Length: 109
Ligand code: 2BA
Image 1 (cartoon, rainbow, N blue to C red):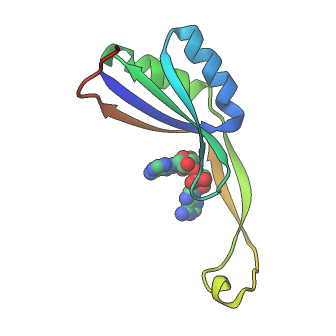
Image 2 (tube, rainbow, N blue to C red):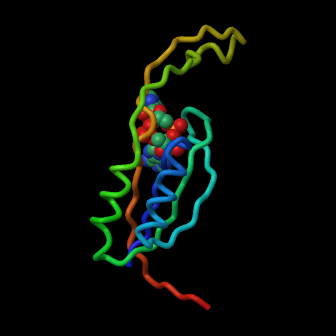
């Protein structure tokens, strides 16, 4: 068994949720926050059997869109002077970040 941890943009949350349900996956949805952008994103915990791994990754890939977003990043020395001179940075957001972990034991009581 595997535990798939999948982080997606909030805008893709409903689409992925619908498709996971439709495909019969069991999962938990957690509201999360990206460390870099500090914006809400969504983390899915999906317990799967090995034979479902390919189908799951395909489902995730087909339902997450990568977008570009401009973010204002404060230069490192701004914090000490209190001055904030934004330097916009274009970062790709969306798509999905996926971790696939082995599960040592799974029990349901
Ligand atoms: P955030 O940390 O808010 O990052 C959003 C996007 O900003 C990232 O997209 C990446 O394109 C960019 N980014 C992140 N850190 C950066 C940096 N130090 N410099 C320049 N650009 C940077 P993704 O890589 O697709 O990540 C989307 C979200 O997935 C992340 O949101 C974070 O919540 C999670 N994530 C990504 N990598 C992770 C990791 N290794 N461990 C845990 N969570 C991760």
